[in-house]
Image 1 (cartoon, rainbow, N blue to C red):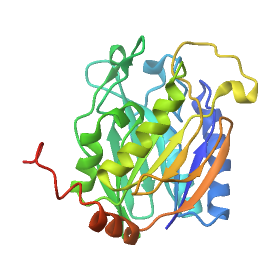
Image 2: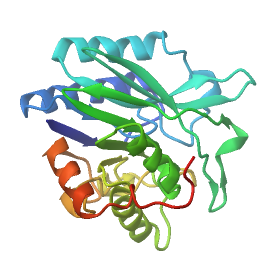
Image 3: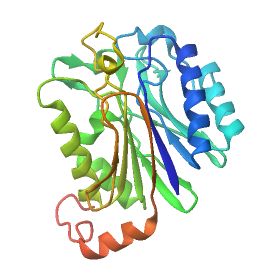
Image 4: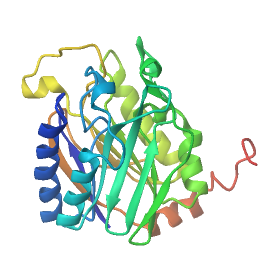
Length: 266
């Protein structure tokens, strides 16, 4: 199955960001993709007041994304913000398209490196997968990548591919950590891992207006053996690559880390 990862820089206005999503989804369709993955905070960038713009999954923004998926015949995965019952918002991935309608709420919140996501964002609690063209696909978001148990839970649920939309925080050593972590999570769960990050605003001449995590780029498609198959640089771009279950099965026969586990097994 061909997938596309759209690395872009979103701004604070959801309507303008939708126009960019539309353009990129049509590009992905022209490239033969069945699935296009947008970053975390595709609805609006971090550093924006999230409460006033959060919408339910049946609200106008998600409805527009659903229509876009219908118009192109692709499954679209995009980061948005939905209202939480306690007055905060939820950092949500919407996955929608022909035969697919689900969402994932980010479990591990970014209370690290001086940023406290949990002040305004409520955590999720459920592992989410969906099926497309014979592949089972797991959903994760950004800081989740530091927690290998989530990706092993995807594998235990039968996933061949994990999607990781992100808006990675910049800083010393952060690119190296990103590249190490996405490869490690693919290898220790023996899944394909598609990591779609926000582009680095500086790569398009935008000065950082906030200390919030607004992305560093370097989206990548990682094989189930931990090798990098496709990657982007810091600036905006569309990464297209092919994934399939046969290589997952072959790697799991060769490197049986899931079968050989002795800790954390129920």
